[in-house]
Length: 102
Image (cartoon, rainbow, N blue to C red; front, side, top):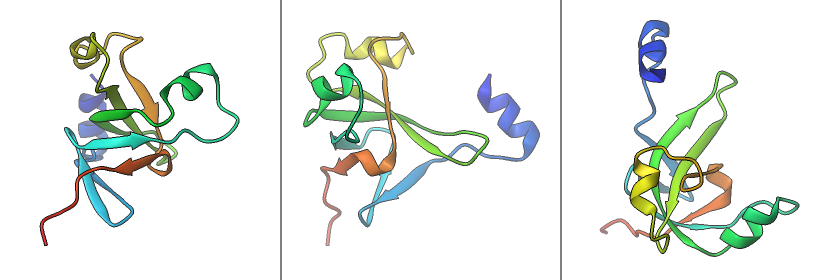
């Protein structure tokens, strides 16, 4: 549904975002480094490997990466957008794990 509204506004969905000089997109593996002062989930997810499931941008142009954690046995539920298996981080809170081919 959100894509419908973006199409109507002339705002295409983001396909990628640059983090530390590396282009990240859906399927990219990242290491999670939540900002200091977060909640208990931030503490639990710190240092975990995750996959980017979507790149979202709100109406103030802030970017959020929707991720699923690699070792979550219910990771496929995150693909179905079931709460509790998807988490949101800013690009500043992730570290790319893929190194581009030189």
